[in-house]
Image (cartoon, rainbow, N blue to C red; front, side, top):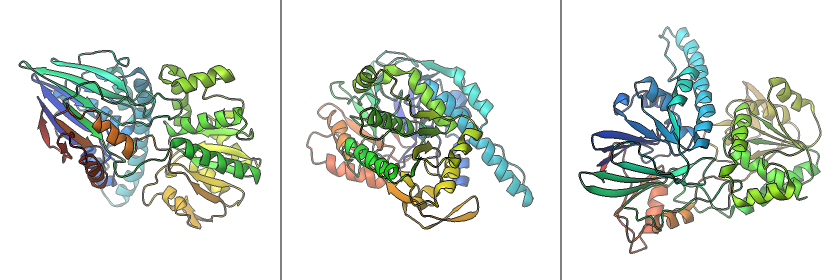
Amino acid sequence: MKLTIHGAAQTVTGSKYLIEINGKRLLLECGLFQGKRKKTYEYNLNFDFEPASIDAVILSHAHIDHSGNLPNLVKNGFSGPIYATSATRDLADIMLKDSGHIHEYDVKYLNRKRKKKGLPPVEPLYTIQDAAQTIPHFREVAYEKAFHPVEGVTARFIEAGHILGSAAVLLDLEEKGKKTRLWFSGDIGRPDKPLLRDPVLPSGYDVDTLMMECTYGDRPHDNINLAFDEFREVVARTIQRGGKVIIPAFSVGRTQTLVYCLNDSMSNGKLPKVPVFVDSPLAVAASNIYRRHPECFDQETWDFISEHRHPALEFDQLTYTQSVDESKALNHRNEPMVIISASGMVEAGRILHHVKNNIHDERNTILIVSWQAPHTLGRRLADREREIRIFGESYYRRAQIETINGLSAHAGQGLLVDYARSVAGHAKQIILIHGEEKAASKLQEKLQRYNDIPPIHFPERLESFEL
């Protein structure tokens, strides 16, 4: 039995892990690597294994850094099943097609530039049609239900609390009489996060090998309720001065969390009732999927629904905009409102128009609620630059900028320590993946204070382990 790390090794993107057992090949995740354009394209285009040789895939959740290269895998010969929870399958359907659209759009732009230089055109990594042909491979499995992806493997999905449908994967492996148990964390969520159930830790499962993410291994998170208090204060101040709150937010997870918080706050009188708009086609589609899967909601959400007698992601003040005309009309309205739109780093989509049309008014607030990558428009806004370029034109910023850093859907250092310690005394090894070197080293420092922690590895890409 061999485990090879093919992605998210000493980085936080491109998750991909291969288990070889009984002559079969089982792939955990098939995510897109995201980085500099040329490196990204070449890395994602070419697999370190033959796609047709993979017998089955298990997918922990639908985020693109975990699922986004599945269409390319299918396109290059994979013909087996992809196991996922029902909600993950539904989210992957819209997210992979959206990703295919982005690849097609980016290649059209790139080929125009290549043509001017006399260079041959390139093909998109995959298309919307390739993504559509991937979805029939999905096999839906309920949480906690045992399934058998390949010979000698019994698997179960365990609640991860990260996004809708997200799961850790518990794998019982047997080959030539040898048995071992592997726990793959996927992305670990946060306790007390709105809408979703808390993540389940691997304590009591007699895990032999723990493979776990360490994205925020170097930093603790504040209590998430403090972040929501700060969010409400920013919204209240902006409304009081007659302004709009413009929020760039990722379409899956962050948008739904903010909608629930606004619903709860307006229903309980913590915020005045003003119009709220979700203005992103992908976010609208994702929110519809959230509403179709109430089985993933936590008890707090069910209590809220029961008390207020309306759904968690629908309320009188909320509008999900569909058309471009509806989106444009928001810029002609002057009353206080909240607009949540994608992309989360303000690099594309309708959010660019909302920022452009509202950046001049000091009554307005542009509210940054997630980490912004260097060189993105979102980072320049978060850095409070005064002159901002959008669509090639310069705009002088008068709108207020506020940042809230406590809304991450990933576990912080404290929970990661608890997660790893929960297997102490039984596990033979811990493998840290999906994290940068600084995060992993800080987490290891914390864990090595405990005498019962097993050996900890932080593998490079293509490093293998005997299980």
